[in-house]
Image 1 (cartoon, rainbow, N blue to C red):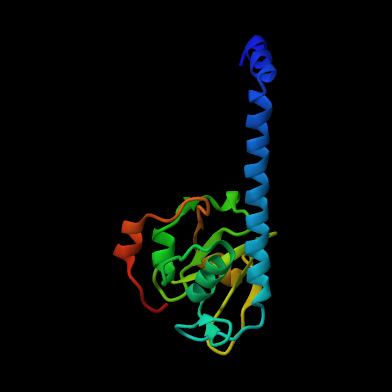
Image 2 (image 1 turned 60 degrees about the vertical axis):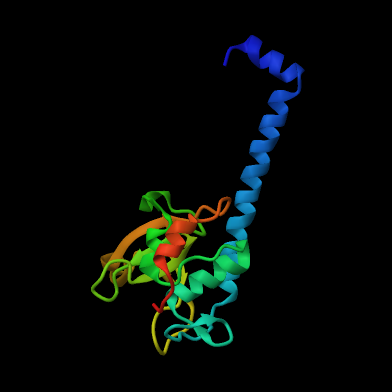
Amino acid sequence: MPADMQRALAERGLVRQTLGHIEQVGQTMRDTTSDLVGTAMGFLGVPYRRGGNSAESGFDCSGFVRAVYSQTVGLVLPRRANEQAAATDTIEKRDLQPGDLVFFNTMRRAFSHVGIYVGDGKFVHAPRSGAKVRVEDMDSSYWKRRFDGARRVETDTPLDASALTRLGAGGN
């Protein structure tokens, strides 16, 4: 932008207002991310339960993710891991940020397992029967071999209602 235009905008208070808005949006995103990870970590130790979707009854992987997003940002994600993958935005693994979803092939089908990325190559999830919500390293051989992709949930706009209707409900 030319200097004279910047000066004119600044004199009218427009540049400061725009920068302030950008800073506010950035802070809101950081707060949301921190809240998502904090909520997820608050469920550490909750037992796995197939079809489970609450801390009281236990969680399966997609029920865990759904509960975290519902409680933190009021967004109701689809029920199954593959549906959550279909309803969110694909990102590259190198672009992962805390709060993003990570998907794995653990049942010989794509997107059969989901967790929440917490940073430093780690994710939190409800792993399997007999286990509890825990943090694991995505670079361990088991998870590295099964990684299916990463997705970002747009928390500032609701998911497309037609996608949610089309996806329906069900177990993990």
